[in-house]
Image: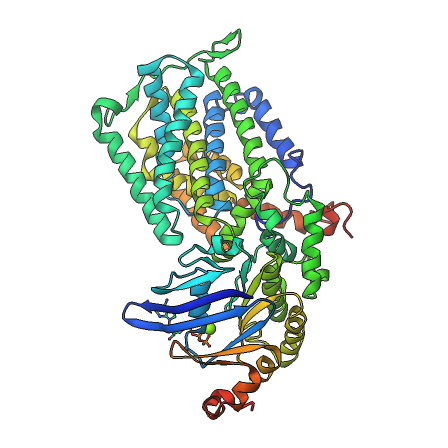
Length: 247
Length: 343
Ligand SMILES: Nc1ncnc2c1ncn2[C@@H]1O[C@H](COP(=O)(O)OP(=O)(O)OP(=O)(O)O)[C@@H](O)[C@H]1O
Ligand SMILES: [Mg+2]
């Protein structure tokens, strides 16, 4: 089943056309990889798909419903989660609160003023489960700002998972990491395959080819190729371009 | 570094040592103010400003929305109270409700314009709106009395059921203000320790992230602005009673700057109680340094500059450092210890 679909997305900033014409279609239960050179428009594409910017043209549908032009919080509530290339965390507070804030059950209490924040032990338990998934359960009560860079990347993913999403968009989750931390995070993402529908922007081709069911190659704001890793490897155009050197 | 977002060791219980001390000071003030050479009216003035400052800090410290025009809502409350007494009927509760309602309404309108902003744009817009209200207060002569303001605003009797109490002298009015303040403090305490308060702080820390985990950031910012304006309005109503008048200076830019200064110096960015320290320090400076030299505001300003340079977390931050330097006592626990049943 097609879970998420974008058709002919266009995005301009003033005279600069960043997304010329992007179409993507994500099947439920699959990992959809996105690659492309720096400045190709990958992050902008994620921004448009998750409501950060409205598209100038095109349509976005989720589970068959048109969500074009909806606000980020509305899109998030449908079960569309994302992480950021440049990290976005709640830094003044502890790790576990970053996750609790993202739990839909906590969000439902956001206008509640009669109870205390951590009264509900099931929320704490639920957050610990999510943290356990990314290997941060034992750091739950540390300040988020005190985590190592790699752990912050993992927390960024935990926050996205906490929303109990139907689909997760990950924007270069391993960027800026050292070799060892990269391997650890790759392992983590591999384990997410089973449970989530994922769209992932990733520069590491070897990793992406192994992980993804389908890959879209974005260049100059357009999808220049979309296929399975095996077929892309055979694609002369991709193989010849600087991107294809894993083949 | 401490932060407002630290998790309180006692959950959200209001029975803390700080709260106890606060209540004790408020309830005993009428008995020691005069013996130590101060005067009844000062206690009332301080209590009103504490109310204003704590409500303001919900917006400034907790939500991180830096309003520099909050004096407007204090003033609107004061005028509304006065106009109610003079044009509707002589009634304490009616006047205070009018003060809250008028400030809330003004806050709702301004909030609708500023809530999609943050940072410098937010600050500038709050100043601009503050100036609009101030200007209106001066120009709408027939309603507001122009530069002179509303004079001779009465202090109506306190009526609770069959009970009728004359609260027109400073000491009894102080008791009334204190009770209102205590109720307001408990309400604010509840607010900041409830999920709503944590969401506010999440928005302060990272608006984008809050949006992408599903919070309607605009609505929450707007609501905070409105609530905070409402508290300012209540303080303004009490202020009109204390001063027996309402005049444009109450809502001047100077006043708006003063509340920011108090909250910053006191440590509103790191502690619920910070604004209280700030208000106390200001009035102590005014009455004690002010007794020695006319240039006291210069000294207070200098203190502000030094404070911002050496201890940007304000007095509350300073106290925290002093406390943690002392030999280990019962420390604030952040973490599983604070959560029974978690190991
Ligand atoms: N708000 C904006 N205003 C103007 N131009 C922008 C804006 N956001 C992005 N761009 C431009 O759009 C282009 C694509 O940026 P984008 O961040 O989407 O690239 P990317 O594919 O994610 O690159 P990278 O691999 O470096 O992350 C860049 O040239 C960038 O300068
Ligand atoms: Mg990018």
